[in-house]
Length: 121
Image (cartoon, rainbow, N blue to C red; front, side):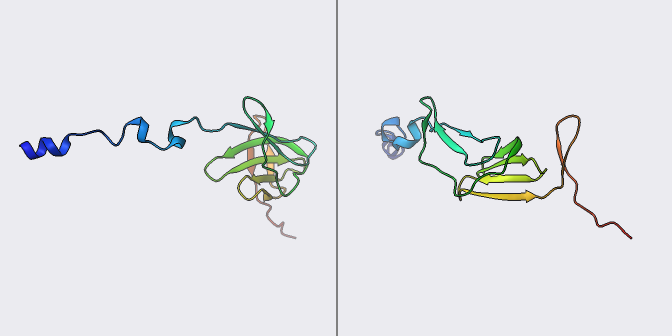
């Protein structure tokens, strides 16, 4: 029993003074501005709203509205004025069209994907 007590004694390695600085600090918060008329998105730091050095490689098309975001994949989804679902990839800084002219808006403002089906003649 004496060996067990000796093995458990001493200072804890999990004390906050031994943790890396990044795990103790507040995560940086940013705001993404997406221009409605299209163009480059801008990233700002909160709370000062200083411009962040991040800049996209491509311009966004004119936007109807923002749909949402996937933080795990680093994507922000928008609906452009041609009813295309467009994604801004925050990691690669590229703009990608996900669904072309197949997004329709309903009265409740949800976006539904309706793939185009060739009509029989």
